[in-house]
Length: 222
Image (tube, rainbow, N blue to C red; front, side, top):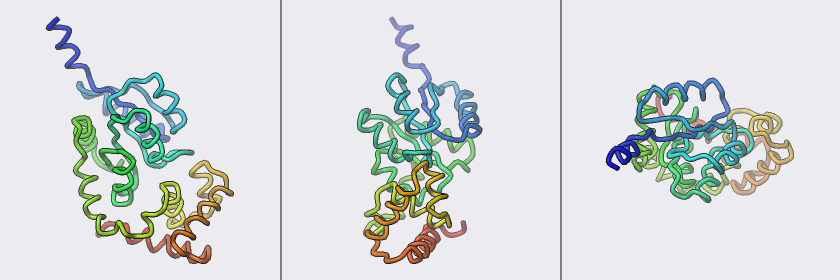
């Protein structure tokens, strides 16, 4: 009985990874599997594959990218939390946490780590979230943004927010549609909703607004 209990207590924590970059995902798998207390129990390329796998997968932590084909990582977090409300979620992304901290917290995520961080910081964030804590990085970023919560940007849906960010990067509707795996018509509809919510009259004004806004989101020194 004691041996069985001890074995159960020392089982490695199971991590499910959702990221559409196979090389990066492979690197994460290798990093995690080198740790005796962690293991990878599943992988998915996008939200659709992930939700299908979740029906049979048992995991302790969902490690998910923000930018996925089709549904975004934020939408996936909301979907999984709706059926598994106690799921621990750590976002790992190329985007600075200052852009997404508040939205990740609202969606139900507990942590945020940038892909550029070193292996030790990634592992630290994983263990912190597994322990039921909210990661230091996401709390710092959220605290720094609290004064901006009255911004009209806060009224945008997560998908509209993503489209605005890509407009700010100089992408047109076709480029955004390809990156998000949406139709051009759907992207144009999102652009219309963004203009309405931000009281913007023209497409040119939207492009200028998005570029200026994106520039203000970059932390000093970056």
